[in-house]
Length: 243
Image (cartoon, rainbow, N blue to C red; front, top):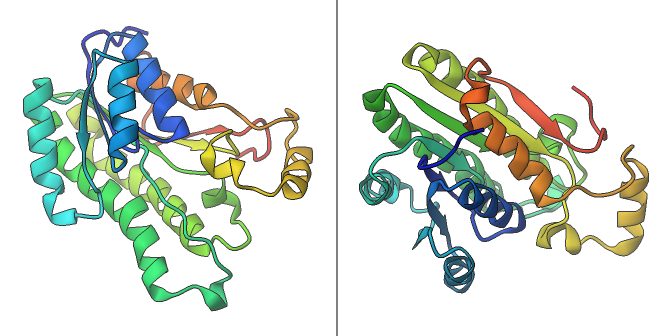
């Protein structure tokens, strides 16, 4: 996989999976712009990976996404790869779930992905090539207790990506998804130990995955080795869910 000098935008770069993505593409000598909302963690990324660019940006500011992508493209000298990794969860049983928290999760996880793709594709059409990898989740396929908003947003990303792939395949733009299972991150660290043990018992591989498991898959889909893969979702879940 040759990703050297590829111009890459990574959203949600300060989380566990995001950090692994930055590490993977930095190691491949890609040109990276990493974004997130946590300035302290972004600065730490810059310290750890001196060859990257960082920019604090809140994807909830939908009206500013196009100008953010324009700015990122100017800084990188174009956009070859977009990785939509940013996401939030606000879990609650449905009868207690507020409309506000429903909208917040869909706005960040789904609507922001749509707007990022829309803006990046305009650049990729001019370049006559591009790769987009959208990070979804196992719960977008299986559902999950207390996560109707999160599950809906992640399922929406899959259907959105399939439709987008159909629209731009002839423009030499590939759009695919990676669907992580339960990965060792700050989010899964918050799972009570008793429930985590039960969770792991349902994973054939016998353990949670790592950020590297996800970033390896993303790097493959972003490379020229995946030129004939389009509209697909690759599951990285230790066998917990098999499509």
